[in-house]
Length: 308
Image (cartoon, rainbow, N blue to C red):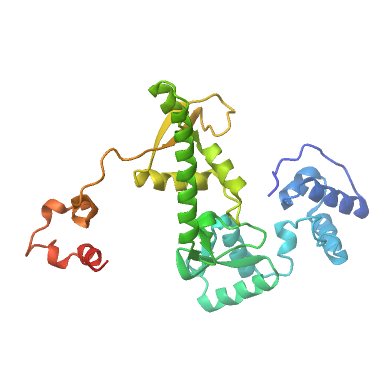
């Protein structure tokens, strides 16, 4: 939405001039304007004059042309009753994370049947849309029609049609680790001092991101945060280590004067057999005993491991 503050103050009286000024404001603020913006720009206008100008533009459908002007809230809701306006406002306040119909019911105090009717009506007008959430396959959230859903709703790059793309994530894991390994091998071949070799083996998340983008293995646009998520999984697997260094402001990949560096590592010693079992990593290992609340015979993790 546009900012309420409009610097230019215009003194217009003719209906045609008022209509043209409203269109200019809409073009000045491509994300849409509120009624307050019009009031600030033309404070001399009576509410009736303002309403007549907006209605005239609606009748001419000049504000509805695609890719030109986004309607302000009052224009969108022309002809709607108070209940519909209330539901629309609740959905608008939810932003791109959306809101569940049950929460709309709680905030509006309207019957569920009435809310469902209003939601269908708003959807038919293309004022709102329903988006399925990855958090619950049967749960739909509602948001304004022109909003891009938040990653928490769609799952981001790791989900397709609400299905987790495990194979895609695995490929990214392999390629990111491969890049860091090649970086470490190149540093080792440089035949420099051990400290220089170690420092040369580090790569920024931006370098890894650029490498993945150049490979062209992703059908979706991956962000730096996506790549750092993959790198974090490699850290948890013990394949990569990370360090943080100070960086100049504006340096690519730096955040708040800091930059994360990653490098591939190889285990000095292979893990023992016990560590590979669920018991070797169990946080309640010392509380586990036969006949107790936690026992080997009732442990689902050891059963699954033995079946595997």
